[in-house]
Length: 505
Image 1 (tube, rainbow, N blue to C red):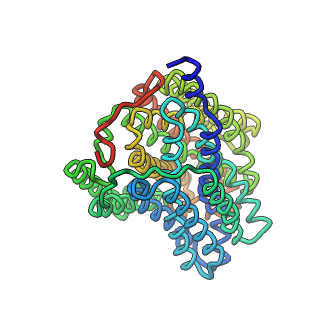
Image 2: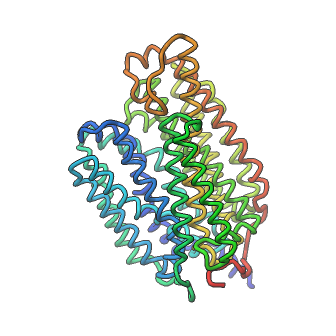
């Protein structure tokens, strides 16, 4: 092939960029919604007259709906095509948002959040499928950098928007704000997204696999949410759910091996070395990243006494670091492979996490901003190049089934990371308080959020030390990334050969 033709084929052309921006328009409301709701949870529970444990189901119900629908996405894309599934997901999310805004009780709000989660759960794997097919393996790093914008910036700027909405409007607007964004996303999708994408022979839906896989994910995610609320994994009310979820996944693996390509998600995808390495890395990134994103605003609010809006603004340097890193990391991934880019990103993430292990009650905001910027550089250099590497060697027909796998792994990792770091934080805090003869009240993250301001001011040095301990745990989780990262490809991919793992093969 003529070199100029090759160069043009590998350039991230206007069509791919537009497709990526259309996908981002839909994803950004989902990622922002999660953090906005977390910020507003206390306000919503007070105004609807519910206790915090009941209000927590606003988050848990959404999470379980996401776990329920993720495995279905791949089959739906193969059966109906990416464009109809994407539009349906956005419409369902918007309808759930509008219903949430009209909720008259905590019970109705929880039910409507489930509807919202059914749409939101299909958007991430659907978006990854669309952008992967549009870009092709040679341009996947740069295309994934576009997709990384909402994934890394949402948790940073979501609290800012949530704080503004809670402070200056009613809680209904935390859901209503999604509706115009969804309308824009649907209009852009109808106008700009390419049609097609259906498999020639998608087959009948694997009902047994759907029951096993969706049921196992729901049970496992619920167990992890219980671990966060209980502040540990030692309770049987936590362990029973985790064991049941793990057993269900083992049964699904046996089912998939027996059924082969006709299964909902073919576990033989993991025979691809780079897909397996990418999956493990994505899991560990989610554990370290999303757990850390939970701790940072909690530190600013509980130790430093900042409001939700100020805490969100103080997290902005991490988002800026990610914004700087992602385009460059995407280009380098396409040129030299993720195996060179991701280890450098891990080192930067470690340099930006280690100082957080020494948090105090008066740590300079300027110093913290610099540290978070470096951490953002690292996270921006790790997350999306890893996704690109996981997809790069797969047959294009297998992408629709790989995307839900990676989304499920990421969701489990995020939930596990939150549970592990909340456990590390609260158990260290309880131990230190007990050693000083101070009774600890509550469990899990509620132990901190429900602590009266006067008490928080008294125990602030102990609380800061506990946050530091939790960040050292996050540092260890981030360091563990280096092992699978060394197995990622160290060369760019130009083409992908046919694979027997494609649906219907």
